[in-house]
Length: 584
Image (tube, rainbow, N blue to C red; front, side):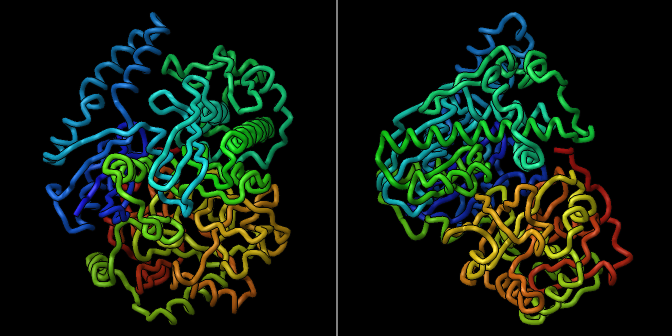
């Protein structure tokens, strides 16, 4: 019996994945256990969960695969810093010490942390991205395009996947990176790099792309193949201190926005402009990829593949017949890809299609049954009710109709950055002020941030211009002409980041939404991640209880248990202290 453990670590979004005989058993990010958002540390807690889920210890693991080649990456980083000397001397020394301490000696770290005595191999970073996308897709053959900040050296790659093999055929290397370009504008608009890119995407519809030509004249250029050239005079990421510099700011005649400064029209227009530039470049890359391969299926991966607005444009262009985006397209998904590299490439095993197609599953994390949940509720002397499924859905749908906000905790935790109905906050989309209320009083985040609708699959085409598409993972935006009916989940540009839901994938949530539809004629709910700003999505019932009592959520559902703020006006202090996270 072959067990293969895939690991991504030491940059951001560390994660682990375990596959058994080519089938995904478990996959989870370290941040969910450590409660440190984007945790880069060695994912020991995630690994231990994966082993526990498979009911094995580390001695049963056949092969460990790390998601990139540390020495190649180290060589690129050190050479970059040397080329910027002497201004990078202190950073060079700090980087050298950091890498020599642990990052460079990954095999030793794995052996030490896990007491693992078996074989360890390394994939390339973009190879892991590509594998995580292709081997979870339903396609036997496809073009695979990966776009991110940078791996070892590659920033954009085109690959061909066929059966159990992936071949990289085109690469663009650092420093000319589409991901770093988008991160630069993320920083300029006052958000954190490697964390706030999705905010920039959400901000874009509030502006107009009036600076698009200015960006193309001064910041970046590209050819028909999507090959980009950055004006490196405008960037400082090679010096390691900041992504952008004063030259970048001078192009636009305005300084970088501070994190908590009020958002004004200028930065909205900047966001709109770079979003438009990015979309045009991605379309060029994909058109070129189609022309040189002739293939009709597309797999996308890398952090840029989480830009659902761009993904919506890709669907609209109809360059490819079918498009698959890996739900964990960032570095966490590389743990998944690394494990598949071990199975398909190194061991040369055949693909296990039905089991690994994430169209069939995404709930790969920890779960808590009713017995475990009730232990938490009793420990903190909470007042609650246990209801059967029908009564639970009746009660919650009535609360939603009455404008209550629901914390919804069910089953196995989702893999990837999105809450998809197991660790979610639910609300009615029918109230115009619901978006503002949830942003300010539940999530404690910026008011411009949009919310995604979850819609019954059988009704999606009546509410969104999806043309028969299914969108299970909130990875594409679609137009809607129903803003007057569901105002709190349609964005400024009349699009929404849609999640479709069918009964087979999540029967309890489907039952709740069907009940809500019967009450309101609306088959849609707001679905946002169960967390507050700066916090990872909740993993355990205790995480959920703490988050619930720190916000103005009204009702909490944990399995078949339901509790309300009204019934629990006095709460154990352990549930109301020490919930503080760094703003993202």
